[in-house]
Image: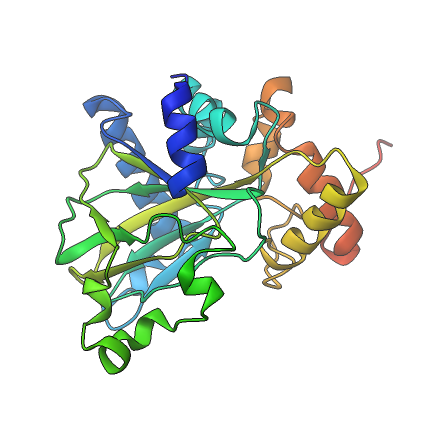
Length: 275
């Protein structure tokens, strides 16, 4: 897919886009199967008992089929339309969610530097775990940021529960739908079951200026395996996504690998010399 100018303007203005049924039914089934294999075999899913969230890193990086999401024309068109065709893929997280997530942004960059692509693998509604967003809250001049309002304290402040914060909207979804939003956007989810399946891909602009490179270093110092002190066996990414990559995929991996290896050389992938 290619984003229209109206969709790009919507994202710039409101901080998010929801794309219904980006994937076919067959593709959605394959993605769900791939996610379940990964969280069960690589992400602690077998121990999930519903009392707390189960999370693991790099959910698309553990099997060739899931790695191929980074090659999918619709995913590349969606991310490329927001961040540029040479965007950086910067890992993500996979989850069995339990309970509310409360309001939060994933960053405070003050610009469109990073975006999250969210895959929700169960039907979700207003009171059953669907994504809530506050449109425009990614902007530094939004009243929440300007007045430093604690959105999660809205009952004490305004007599309204956080799930009903004025101006917020709910993006109900079904498997196969996709949401993408600016890392600075306030978002949350409320209610739902104790095993809500969701995974993300985090992406950034390709850094081309000294200022962008510094921002990329700040971003990866936090949002990366090294930032979480997580050993992948291959530095920035789990090995499969690198080992199965062609040149087009590597374009989205090289800069994060280079920066991550500079920041966390002790986690860099060891190169075995021939002979």
